[in-house]
Length: 191
Image (cartoon, rainbow, N blue to C red; front, side):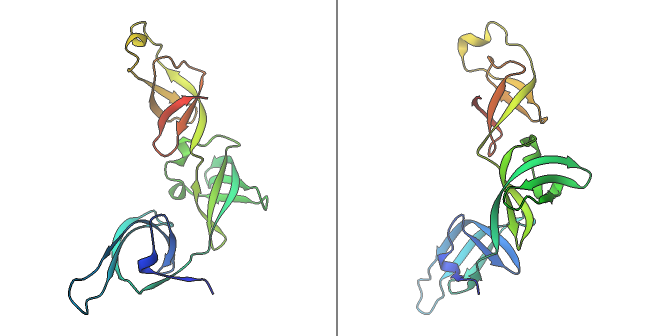
């Protein structure tokens, strides 16, 4: 049997199971009553890992939650088609398929062969964990005008090979590889 965790011990970034679904704790707030005999309550801001829905719920401090059967497996991106996006599990060498809802905005960063991690719940893929940075090639950007370099603070629009549009410094040219932070979708540097 999986270990049980009391609500009062659930902290930020912890995973737990509630009503048969896996959740990630985004924030926790403990309120201790001032009156005698009052119960300590724990307010959790939590994300359902299956639907990505975020909500807050209050629990009694002693309520217990099971540890979910979650696993992160290394995988590489293969391709996308009408059925979904396909990834190669690097441990079992089986092909894992995730649909559009499971991916979120991850398609903005996926290129063939990209190494990442797939979240599995009860053995089935439910989502992705992208690397912190990805390297993508700039496919479209306007050329920098001479005055852009003097101030050093300007940016210009650019489009990368996956279709993601972002702001980059004026010295970035078409065909150049750049590093992008997957959490924010912002330019991080030259690759």
